[in-house]
Length: 204
Image 1: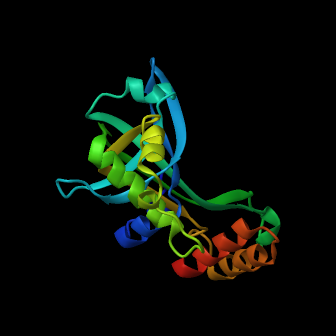
Image 2: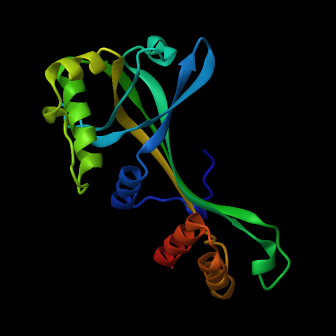
């Protein structure tokens, strides 16, 4: 994606935290020569070789996996909070724009199965059940039920090769206009607007 130099986001711990907090992402690859996207949760971690990676799974009925060959390059898109920025919020004439946070991960994909797929599924459930009352785990489900569900899934692992991260948060504005944008976003009833205001405070 195009990233203006002012918006380049290069703080690795922050980007990893963003990926983990916005883990419902979009997997993009080619199916029959056309772009194909599937929306699914990913787990960030390390693969068996110690490389940074993403693990996920899709339905076996989804044709995307049939076009994937081990080692193919794919893109995974992580989208964070975003907000419309009105021209009326500046103390001078200007165009409206949009503030947002987004991360594009490129990597080499491969199919995972057997114990690797089970490890991914257990980790995924544990991550999202953490802190919930009456939490469940794959281990508490019957073996026959788990196996019947696993047969309908295809596991995926993406070894990360590149990360392109953009935090477009009005970095090009002076302090007066920057603070007024935060103020207006804070007053919005939209939780996304308020999240963008919070992210802007972290940047300045």
